[in-house]
Length: 279
Image 1 (cartoon, helix red, strand yellow):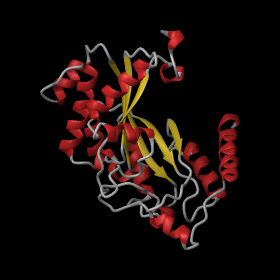
Image 2 (image 1 turned 120 degrees about the vertical axis):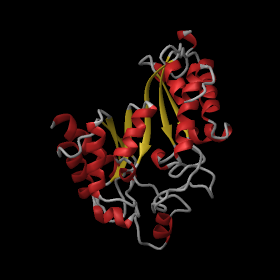
Image 3 (image 1 turned 90 degrees about the vertical axis):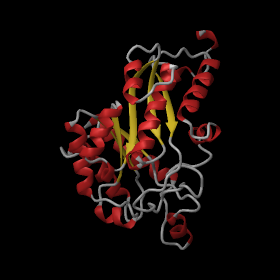
Image 4 (image 1 turned 60 degrees about the vertical axis):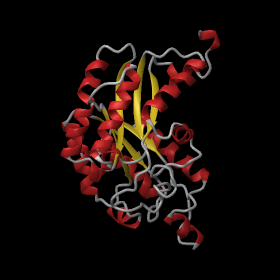
């Protein structure tokens, strides 16, 4: 089987990472100016229809069981043995979706791993304990204002093991300019509440937003990893992109926004990496 395996890094650690996408819902606070997607577009907020994960979700009509089962078939067809799975629930801010949908979605994810339909979430979690395919991790994406105590309590009940928080910046001014719908205090509280619950935190950062500059972005990364209020366990970096149909695209067309060049982004990330690797 190893000789026939394609893309060996997909399970090199012994764990297969599977992304499962929720169906489109509009964010309650409105739309961040850089954010594509939404119910009118037919894709989850912040995701493009051309992304591989979105295309797989569309093919499965956003059904979580079908998404997982289809992904299993794909991985097995290129020689991967699946017995340990880490699930990443993506599709925007999971915790602002209707509770019934959240619960049903998570239950369906467990059902797909267990290979059997359960009556409720509690039974699905119980069956997962003896399933031949072990769920070794479950992460969800959220925003700081949807990462309060009640949301974390719910995540614990779902069996979530890791919280991914879309911070993007550490500037209240930029939060306002981009219509994020929360403050820096919400960011600080989301970290504290998540840490108190024992969660690993993945911080999402977006350098190059309106109102920022290369120095501000660099300083944000330094603060993020040195200030006790933050210090995430992991980091995802999404340099700002100008996507048609967004508020940011309109600003770009009117000459009110200039994106970083590829060279500027590479230089910034190289400096950040060097700082963290060498102190």
